[in-house]
Length: 182
Image (cartoon, rainbow, N blue to C red; front, side, top):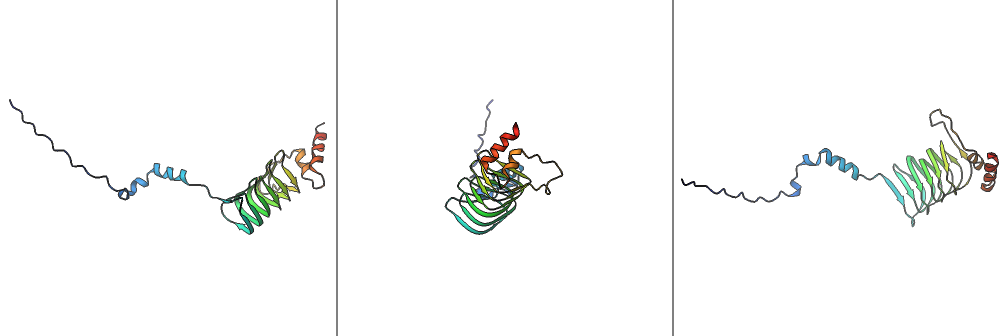
């Protein structure tokens, strides 16, 4: 018996479709949507070391200051960070403020004000939570406004109470803090 087999014809080579021809359904897959979310950068504005700003700063995003700012900064609901090179002479109103550089003026925050070890703050602070790092320099008043927070007791260490007094120097506050422990 002689079996005749036909050779199958090879399929023609088809070029890949161009990228623009990709179906929109592929873009809207859950994996693509999740990947797009990860790629979104948080809204953070920055004032670099070489920049000087005079006037009123307002906006709807977080702000990092490494340069010099004079005037008013109002970013209600957002964070302001004064970096180690930042110099600010302003009234600041924000959700939270971190002072790593120098600030002359008042700060009013809805959540927290933190003066880092590299920070110098001369002026008044008003916020429900205030943190002064070891090594931070501060001269002014602290008002821990608890009206915007739920009715809870706020524990303030004795050293913080003494440092917040405008009539006592930082060195004297260490002496009082040491005396209160004995």
